[in-house]
Image (tube, rainbow, N blue to C red; front, side, top):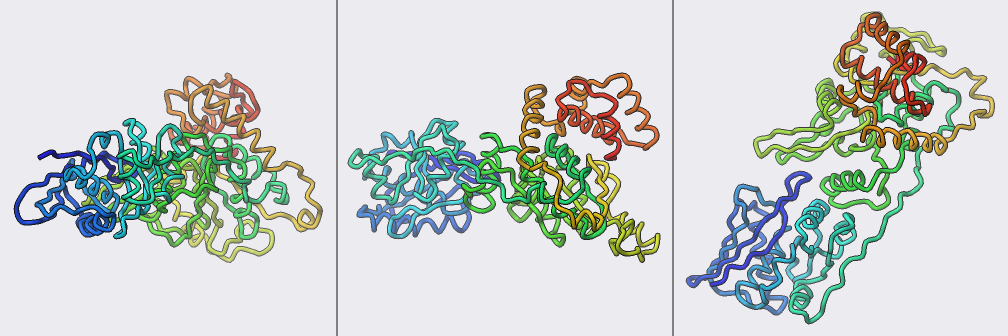
Length: 495
């Protein structure tokens, strides 16, 4: 008896390992068994496959059917294996030829009528299938997402009967055409709408140019949140590779990719009551958290001191490594998390320390306890520390004189990032210590000033390296090859 093999993909985080579906038919009492570490939803596919075959005018074999999902050590969940199982049964019972099955991968859930239904996380399966050089059969709702890699062949198929006709050459399916998605105009506030705050605008522009983390501290109502929401409008479009990385995470978390956000850097702004699992990821089967959903974009934490301590401390490792490693009893997952941290907080519990409107009523002990909610190691990982002062009423009542728009800054940011990519292959915030010595060339005066700041400000080695990275970004923003003393001086002012 022939044992045909069909191919599909499992879903382990953002990875889609290959699953070979082996089908064997023997005599004896009719029985349908699925082995290979299937979960409940996979075992339930037996009834879906049986009904789909019979309602598609095929015969369901009255034999002992054994379907093996290999490799057996990978957990199998969901209905994504239905179509591959059905095709294996049809090939094993010789109702369709098994000649061309090895050229395809199948990823769809079956309805009882034989229709193909979409599955989540199809983009990672499409990327993996393209690497293997196989064509991918998906439900019509998954086709636009599955073709995003651009170098693969995807066939949207409405039903099991239409797929069998395609494989037998009776009615050939048309491959899904690739359509380049254009990003929409950013809906973020424009910098020109912000009154005053010249230093804050400058700092945000530098943060966008080098993907640096920022902490803004100031009384309530000074414009911290509005400034923060201007940052997405300063960021350049994602590259095709970055857009695919972001889309894979979106597909896994939301079940689909939103084409309106294609090539736009993600901006995540969770409420301060979120848990550490929501922030960095977790669950029985670990799923990506907000730090991964903000990959290649911005994670904005407003009211930073109101977040739970354990949630904030969980940010230390991804800020340093750009990766989140989640270990659970059910498995170990790694998710990318190269995000740009943007945070805002009040200087004290009442919020008016150093303000011009009201007098602070907090005791020194209360102020110290409030500020101690943010640990030293976390603060040390933030590149730019910014004091946002209240704006005088005369400035608010006058017409905005600043003509610097977000589009103008975004153009300069794009030029600075292009310079960084050409020089070192990454943004300045991602420079390693070895590359800092190679690409962050300081003049004698600049080096002396940086060494003095290291001693007088009691900087750690990490803080000193972050000072150099910001200095390198300031020089790039000014289109200068060498880091001068004025660049270092400005970077020191942000520590």
